[in-house]
Image (tube, rainbow, N blue to C red; front, side, top):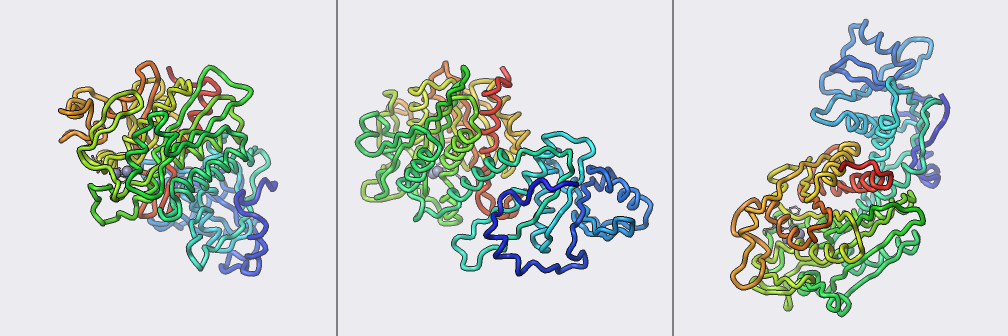
Length: 503
Ligand code: BES
Ligand code: ZN
Ligand code: ZN
């Protein structure tokens, strides 16, 4: 065993703050704890080395782990005489094999933190692969996120040291880049609406652009008007916090034939507007800018990883409120492509801001456009809180996104874009209306967006309204923002940059 890295996300300050509390509070004592990953139901060892002997021990002994337990510490009386932490990698059902490992990593990190463990020793994997190694590490990283800035009593953070086997090559830097991006997105999404207004979000994007050498264009008021970005202007009219469109561009020296544009819905708070939402859980609508946070974090990560591909991220920022000047049901505005839009429901605002982002993406010369949005309650009813909705006019792009999601622990289900349902979007006065009277809400919303995408461009729409936020502990998030979709976008950019895509 050789030291590879300590908890990648904890810094030395925390180390000194917590060292006084670092007293062993279990019988496992002060020394290192061995980790043994195994699949309990299959009676299969996942890790090697000393673990093999331990598995033998379980098989031969009378000892059985309690059904509900996924973690258990046992002191094995052998020549090592080390306490061994048993982690069941098969506890959850229905997860992808890599996600089982992420969950195992997450659980063991939580346990180590809660029990003030100094050192965990992770033996080599039996059927080792880079993907498996990273999955465990990702689980460890996920465990150290906490949004506690508004708590006087902060979450206790321990600096657990992980020792990995010699042959477990790990690129700690790229992992750190990914996770600082994931944590950055979660922090933005978890911020309340009174703090994170469109202008503040634009300032944050500006500082990222400055740090990472990205070109940035921030449009507000007159500049939006000049370019015909009336969707964003119309939605933002009811609030004194003025709306904005932020375009960030990453142009590496090394590039290929692909050019990705990410478009994010950035409603910093969605009250529903004049068609006011019911009060129940309305506070969760502070997360209605998840899409924008994700596309900002995606370009941050991609530029830090220096991926050889051109990428743009477009943030469509507005606050949806009733107010003196708010858009009214029945109002009509002209979109950038000349089509007139009648607002039947002011709560279907996401699609109105996105059409400007989609138009902007086309002007930048993108070959592939992916929008990501907390768009419809209907997608949550259709796919629940574990699977995101994917719509696309391109089989290749859809499959590449789904593959990227599978590798990242983010499940997507491709939904139909059947034109038959577009019938309901026809309006008697304007060219199109923003909702249909009936029909499948998530599909109708996607069909509305499709009206504003040039047919020769490959486009995908990711509806994350069911998965962006969790009210109860789910996978590696205890409460709040999940940043679902971010890993998929980064992985997709990797695939396009390496030309490892589906056609
Ligand atoms: N932001 C909501 C969608 C949403 C719902 C996000 C639940 C996260 C969780 C969106 O702007 C909205 O209100 N959509 C309406 C559309 C309807 C009026 C056609 C909806 O889904 O109810
Ligand atoms: Zn809404
Ligand atoms: Zn919304």
